[in-house]
Image (spheres, rainbow, N blue to C red):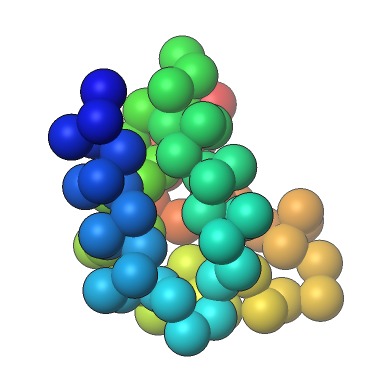
Length: 71
């Protein structure tokens, strides 16, 4: 568990620290544990710019999640 937590914090610090607040990254790491959302953390690594654009959108709730299958 500790190794997983350190790894997820490392990913956030290296790739998305400039634009995503810590509280939001913590929510994403918890979301990744839910059925149907596994892989959301790794999609941040693969599609960083796309996620940043999604996050900055005025209505992200109307956009599909980046790099995720349709639920």
